[in-house]
Structure formats: C-alpha cells, structure tokens
Length: 304
Image (cartoon, rainbow, N blue to C red; front, side):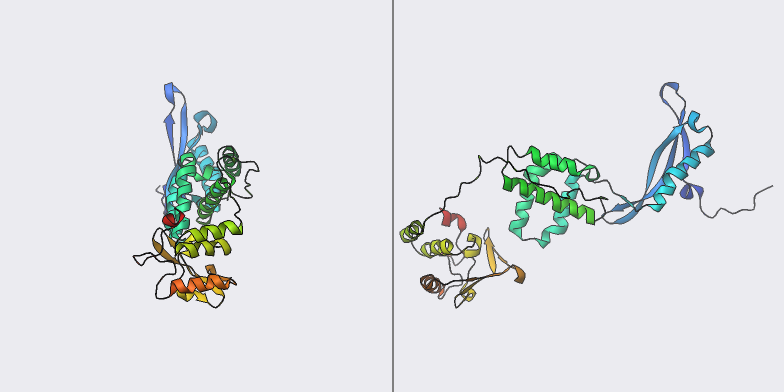
C-alpha cells in the first residue's frame, strides 16, 4: 500500500543528507553528512552548505545511525546557536575596516593607521583567520617586537589591532573580542627614539631673532604656546579674539581640514607682544602665516 503521508519539506533540507565513501586502499566505508548552516557575512546572514565526517561503517553500522548522529550532534546544535561567523583573514578585515571606518577619521590619522597596518601588522597577520587569533598570541606578538621597536610604535600596533578586531566583533565576524587588557611591554628599544632637548628661553628668542618674518613670529608662537605646527599654520585673523586663540583647523600635506566643534581648542594668550605680532601678520591676509602664493606655509620649509 502507498503511504498517504505527504512530506511538505524535502528531507535533505530538514535533516540533511548522508552518503558513504570508500576509504583509501580498500579501507572500510566512511559516512559523511551534508547540511546547511546560517553564516554571518558582511552583507547579512546567508545559508551555506557544510560537510562533516560522521564515522566508519563499523562505528555506525546503518545509515539510520549515521543520520541520527548528524541530527543530534550537528544540526540540532546549530539550530540553537547564533549564525556562524564568516571565515575571514586579517588582511580582508583590514580592507573592510578601512572602507567602513576610514571616512570617520581625519586624513592624517587614517594615514598613520594605514602605515602601521602596512609596515608592521599585515606582514605577520595578513593570512591568519580572524577567528583563530587569541589574546595570548597578540600579547606575545607585541612582546616579540619590544627588542626592535620603541614604546610608541608598539602602542600604535596595539591600538590598530584593537580597532580592527573590535570592528570585526561588532560586525559579528568573531564571537569574542581578543584584545581584552592587552599590555605594552615595559622594556622596549630606546636606541632609535628621539632624544628631545628642552631649549631655554634665551635660545628660543635667539632663533626667533635670526629668522625673517613670518618665521620669526611662528617660532615665538610655538615656543610659548603648546600647539602643533599643523595647527599653527592653519590660523586665520578670525581665530584671534582678544587674548583667546581658537584652533579651528589643521593643514596637512597642503590640504585644510576643519576640526569638529568638540575637537576645537581655545588657548589663552597673555603675551601682549606676541598678540601684536600675530595681528600685524594677519592684517589683509587670509592666513596668519602665509606664503607668497597666498597659501599656508609648508611645514617642511619651516623646519628647514
């Protein structure tokens, strides 16, 4: 008699499928199971096929036993678990992170992070699966670089690893964040670090007196106020309000970048002579420290 039961869902989708394959050199048959799992990818959750080894004919005896093992050990466990993260290398992650997070950073900051990736991180981690990277491996990696790199360089490596792997964790590509409480080695290479000399007030005034304007005032400004040269050359007359100097922009590689309101700084200037020199330079100009072409001064020329 023909069964009256109607199977609405194909069994290969509901319970997977089992097939037997003969082992090498005439060994006994081995059962393999094929089923589908949900995979978390960059474009969303997708269903993909997965193949697993179930056991030999001696271990399972019948196909029914093999199908029961496939359902109990693999399919049932996968239905209760969240989507499996997509297999991704660190090199691919770095590309995705740069495309997604790069526009939210300023160009100088992004250039620095990309340089750290290219020079120090990708040569070591590029082909590694991000699911296999552990906290212990990251800490050992930083420790192994202590003999060749300075503390600031190792901190840059740690920071970029934290940002990229945090992005992977928030995107669902790794189940756990491996950069928890990563520490910088206490003893690092100091032979190549810059030895900064603290100049006296007399030395600063002497340098300022020996160069022409607008370099003379620029030297005096940076000697008496804590700011970077990229901030100093981005000053305009409207940034001077009484005894308050507001830093609203930076100039990097000839391009002007306006700072967000929460990134802007206000610095009190109590030096009357310095204020008078700044206002005199700014009169009738777009930039306080302006070149002959009407553009901000080039930092490399200033340093030379």
